[in-house]
Length: 489
Image (cartoon, rainbow, N blue to C red; front, side, top):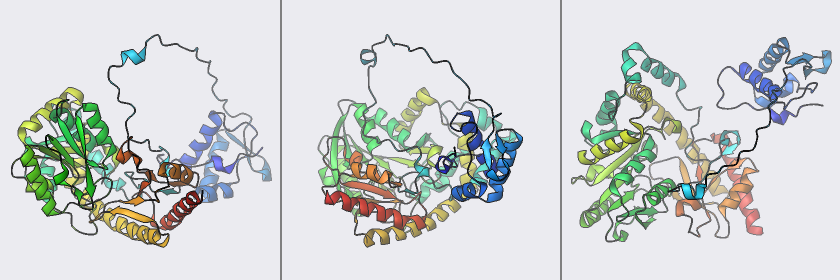
């Protein structure tokens, strides 16, 4: 029996040479029992074509497996799993264990059941991944990041990597943020007004824990970032949803009695709306009337390839009302989980104490590596490179969207990495996404941005951060075709 060639694929996250990855892929298949003794492998030519590698690479991998007796060669017949290949390990079946704990009673507070959707872990295996927030590894500067990580491992930086900062942060990273990152947003701050966080979401959680109680009211945008809604629901505060329009959050709709206003003025999530300067001043005025605090999430401001981004809302704040949330995760890579809070010293003091009680501080080696990557200019070079590529992809996607008569509900004024889309009213985009996944296409349904009680089912988001330009037209065509089929039924 021949092994189907479709069972062979290279993991995009695997390390090592292509030859070693192919060897590992086949050896694991044998050791797991998926490839049985005597089964025939694809020819080196077919497997090379399927994997997109050179034939000599596959031949060398086969030769190495042959020498280790994982495979055997039968003249002109090809390669087969050897009769002497290692046996898959045999495990004794585990005895079934019954919990005696009544977890329904034991759990005092639940965090499951939120509105944040699960994203497929294998998104990179899809040919048309219009998925938001994932890194395109072809764009990332692996070489210089590796060099910075090695530099941070050196004897000179030994204490930065190994020391317990307790409630403090890497001074080199703080210095770069104060001298380079914040001035670009029009913000001036002191070291006592900055705190490093484990990404922007951690910053939002710290903020909610400090500012909100069951008796206080938080205003959020509608639609909004679903993880923020979950964080605020967990805080048990009163929640007020403020509709957004083409200019973002509408200050005059913020209810009396609001204590904290969460906003994304530069790049509204998910509509991509940018709040004009006049409305930003109106929002500050409304916050003053309410004696409220504003939490500004300034994500994706670096992806400004169409026009320069507006100065941050905090740059217009002369009363200390704005708490600023920034992140390096979106522009570097999401797994970095490195963000920062900027606010008045009394607030940062409390945030620092809360962070210390939960996780002390983000890993010192990660902070120092990021500090080197930023200060040596690699970060700015990476952002420029990403901006050029994203601009091209955006142009290709916009042409494809127009060609197939799909509707754009929101697009960023200065760039960004996605389009906010609206399907015909009768189309449920969760159903659409399930159909498209079978066509090798991933989209992000928009229902979670509106909340579980909403009947808004026809919105979706298309990101171009993780898909090469040449695949965009066919992917958009498949989306259009599936929408047409759903409309016919």
